[in-house]
Image (cartoon, rainbow, N blue to C red; front, side):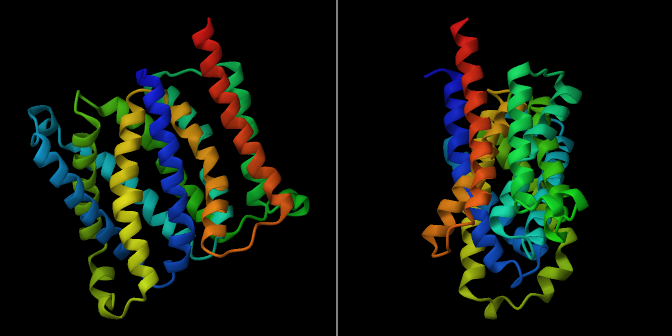
Length: 298
């Protein structure tokens, strides 16, 4: 399997794991401060990845160079996750997932700024198509709301977080100095955990940890193991093998995965008209994958 193919497989897994954060996070968003939740989840994820790194080979020399890189990466991703859970206090999971699908367009812009990564006409068309599908869901298929630009508070907060996520993707390749995806992930997690423990100290102290409902602990456990340790590694791995726009293109699958997660957890299916927007984002991903195939054919 080629390096690019492994990158695509990693992002397919990434999209499925990320999607689980939305329904689980929305269920617990009002039970615990986003700062406290994310501080704990990052500490747990750091312990998990750190144990794996230690067992494999320990921290190699290159990982200790320029620690400011990890502070920057960890800070950017901490901003994303805190704003995600803040937004999920009021945004519906499918709607928030649609906001997430706007990140490929923003990532393509940051990819050009940081790495001078260009996009072909087909990729640009796919990004526009995916953004259109996302907007359709964000405005709940209501043209009057689109014309009036009525975006919910939760969606607006999460959009700011997605801007940080889009910046993070090309930044990984820009700052990597030969570290493996696992080691680079560990450094980023350590920095993110440290930042959140400092900034979220008051929120952590104010949380009644002994009386948190089970759904809050489920959200913490899932986000720490799968949506932090797992997705961080997958994203780092793919970012070193694929252009930023294509890495983030897999976010187009997230609304579809969120729908699957919701039904599995007992939620009703979204309105059929909203599924039109989900379908457009899936088509955008297929168009991007077709672009890969055409390039190989030539």
